[in-house]
Image 1: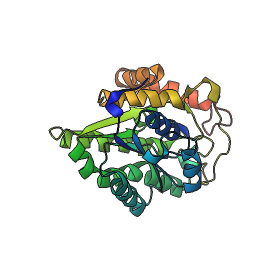
Image 2: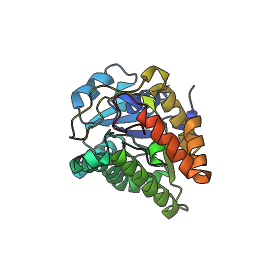
Image 3: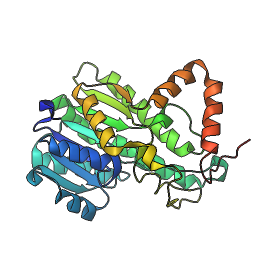
Image 4: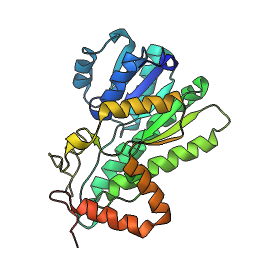
Length: 274
């Protein structure tokens, strides 16, 4: 399905080399947008570009979002080529899986640098252009950005921080035409769990979850497009995510118990079943 709303819009997607970011970039390319794909591997981005339509409307920019200068360069290169920015999708992120007591603190720093500071840096430099276009900024969080997820202290902290940052940004610019969306897709079939960091900072290498039972990245991308088209403030995609947020408000101790038991059942979980 095509939305006329997106035609010719300039859209930046970080973390565009895989998962939700890749699916989102491909979807917007099919909507006749001008798409800027950002990721650390420029070789991977250029390879993806060869498989996409309207290649003249696609720009690949090597970007490590944890590096402020990379984020500044991303925005500058976008404006240099296309002259404007209409939508910024802050999707780049990493996860973790370990008990905090066992965790190397550098792991939390790496998560905050990528997930939170990456969102802050890109948004900071894109904001003047988004205000001119009365555009949209999106932050991809998860249910872990609404409730504390055991075994994911750094991940939850970074996603809570993104949500607080963007919700505040929305209030600051409520009369400026800026659209700010906090987007929580829930567990999605992607490689984020394969590269999730363990207690010592090494990647876990294999997902502990059945990816076949999760929402596809393509479906997530379609829901994001819907949220952008209708300028939603917040989207929580899964029923369990919506229920968790609701019951965390009315029955927080019950939610904590369910969370603990759920995460303890993961294969080789760092959470010990009591």
